[in-house]
Amino acid sequence: MFNYTLRRLLLAIPTLLFISLVIFLLLELSPGDPLADMPLSIPPEVRQEMRIALGLGEVWYIRFYKWLYLFTIVEPSHVIAGFTGLDIAVEGQRILSWQTRSPVSDIIIQRMPQTLWVVGLAYLFGILLAVPIGVYSAYRQYSWFDQTGSFISMIGFSLPTFFTGPLLILIFAVWLGWFPIIYDTTLNVNSWETFLRQVRQMAMPVFVLTLYNAAQISRFMRASMLDNMTQDYVRTARAKGMTERIVVLVHVLRNSLIPVVTVIALGIPTVFTGAIITEQIFRVNGLGQLLITAIYASDIPMVLTLSVVFAILIVLFNLIADLLYALLDPRIRYD
Image (tube, rainbow, N blue to C red; front, side, top):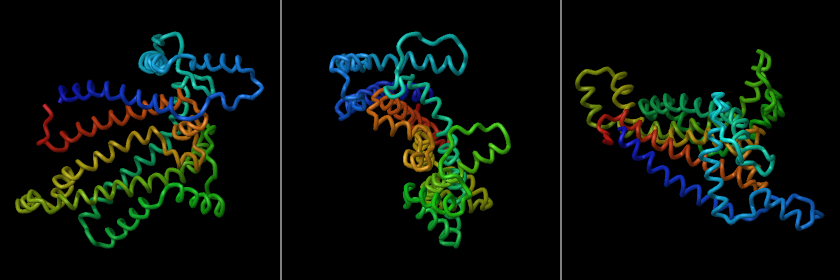
């Protein structure tokens, strides 16, 4: 297991380097100018000096190398120093956002709590709901519970969040007035009253994402359970006199979780990337909205850094999913 993990981590290095280069070149070739919003009255020589100040006066491979050094050495040192208080931050130039002229890592850390609160809780609730629903629906196949669960999951998976989000806003915020329309990112939770306000403003976006996540995962859980319920080892376990609870919750569930773990593990990076559409609808000032505004403003340092961070999370959780296979199925060995 250790040797396999080490090989995968070493293989991830050239993979992420290639992904970073591809994203960088795509941004280089994409239309857009970070100085497009500047007044036309600015003299050309001043505009050129501004471009040089943004780091656009050098060839692309030099800029990519500088960004790579700052991304792998300088920014991690500042992040670690900020969390631990250790004096290990590398002094000098940092990756700055062209929009705010602030370090990109600082902005990401500021936005991440909002994303984790909304998208993270929705994903956790979706898993906690989907797994038992999928297990019981498969065990009671074609029952009223299975029919109802399949119908709700079909609706939740089919309806896009840009439909269910405005629909909830119209019903529960505009007509009934139960929840606020816009998410207040400046709310400081320091009392019971502010905590209830936080819960109220999180209710609609969390419900929208929970419905979508639970619908997707429960469908996989139910299908995987049905595939394993008819296997020979299930009949053997029942023939040995094991109780139905042991057969379903130990033998069948453990084997059925293998494909579901893949879906869950690959979905975890979306918690950090944020639900772009949902965050836009409810005005949640998270990472998804940060990426959209950066794309609109041609903020290449922000877009590039966020995209590579998302790629790192996807590669990492792919590895975690593979390692979990060996824990769920003793027959799987990597070494």
